[in-house]
Amino acid sequence: MSLRIVVTVKYVPDATGDRHFADDLTVDRDDVDGLLSELDEYAVEQALQISENSDDDVEITVLTVGPEDAKDALRKALSMGADKAIHVEDDDLHGTDAIGTSLVLAKAIEKAGYDLVVSGMASTDGTMGVVPALLAERLGVPQVTLLSEVSVEDGTVKGRRDGDAATEQLEASLPAVVSVTDQSGEARYPSFRGIMAAKKKPVESWDLSDLDIDEDEVGLENAYTTVESATERPARTAGTIVKDEGEGGKQLAEFLAGQKFI
Amino acid sequence: MAEVLVYVDHVDGAVRKPTLELLTLARRVGEPVAVALGSGAGDTAAALAEHGAVKVLTHEAAEYGDYLVVPKVDALQAAVEAVSPAAVLVPSSAEGKEIAARLALRLGSGIITDAVDLEAGDEGPVATQSVFAAAFTTKSRVSKGTPVITVKPNSAAVEPAPAAGAVEALSVSFSAAATGTKVTSRTARESTGRPELTEAAIVVSGGRGVNGAENFAIIEALADSLGAAVGASRAAVDAGWYPHTNQVGQTGKSVSPQLYIASGISGAIQHRAGMQTSKTIVAINKDAEAPIFELVDYGVVGDLFDVVPQLTEEVKSRKG
Image (cartoon, rainbow over all chains, first blue to last red; front, side, top):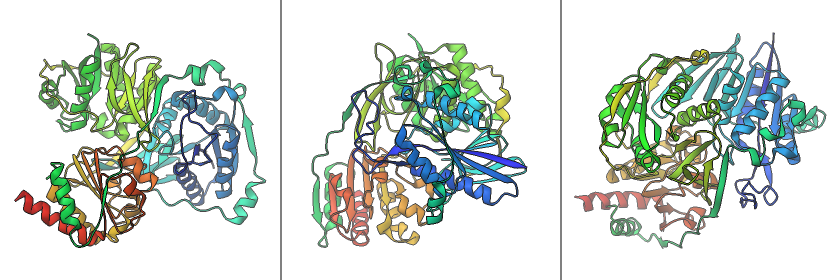
């Protein structure tokens, strides 16, 4: 038996940088360093753990859609231990929204071949958290999403989903789409050996023609949503800061009473 | 006037507050038609009618509880086909966003998530979003298909507006995909008696400075004196001091209460992403350089173990 896992990852602008919008109201990637979305590290980690816990032959492919620099995200995942990588890159992809991105990912996943797709719960830039569900819908396979625990055995994926009102145990047959939360387990750091090995691992580059996607199905012009304006939030006016010299709690209560919270 | 579908989030017929907020926003764009699914769906009608639903489409079936997400997508799709609405509004819970995403794809529509406001526009509803850890505000609209928009809790004040609320049975046939992901067990979360984190008017949060699970009792005591919900930073959750369901931040809940009190929280960008839109922000921290103080309306530089209990006592005595 063999198990083919595709992990979808995203190259995102560093959240601790000064993120802003370009003139066309897409995210400006030029002024902020990019990196592998932290939440996708959890997806890579769970794929590696599924592999380590499996008696089957497991092949882990990391997949990203993004500009040239997005290769850095793939390299990180490879150095953690993934086997190979696919980079979908095309100038016509600039400004593609979640619906379009899910099309590109789904076509690439089908072309790569898969038994299991593993994603992070959301990207750390757009934070929509809809791509795993969109992939399941497009691929026509079960979604087993927002898992804090995941296991695969005998062609079945099981997991635990912590919702607002209840904790659920889920189960589905492969092939399936899984997404994992930051509660699924700390992601490993790449070892020196892992980093060296990653340099030799294959990275395939595909463009839209490789995926039979027409240029009018993706890109900013063909997005399903339009951003009309983006304005920087005005800086908060400086608040009052007091040093506690024994009356800090009482002073704070006074402030809260003045604001009618008490 | 065009109809607007509102997906109802309810627990055994008890409608949750974010849905009532949605009905208020929906009235700006059209006539709200509510869709209530699963056990107790029919019991939602009175509350929905009182808040402006002209019609309530209901469907009860075991599939909604036994399988994940897809049965609800099938039902909403049936409702869209029956009503041809001007927009579909869904509460921005994790599940709500998944339902909305799959529905949008089936309808050939665009999707906007986590709207914090909604207004009518010449070319359809315009949604306001707060992005990049609330550093920017964007206005967007769906440019293809029937707009599918998820709206965050606390985005509007609930305003009663009595309407007919006529209950109609929705006819649903489940897709082959509906039974793909089985829910093999469900354990309801024990109620703490405190308000829901995302719905609360006041949130009191603790972070690394709380320094231990047992010390969260002083955070809880302050919360209880104010009738507030309890939140926790990721550091406190990762340390195992408080449950993940109470995590405020980028990978936890995003909250927007009238008052947010951060205790022993430094204010890393991931935490700020989840609370920066709070109306009034208060922080207590020993470190005068903590970035959280850049956000506050009122800050106390001091030991939370001194300041928080004193504040709790003061709140209690003022409330009598």
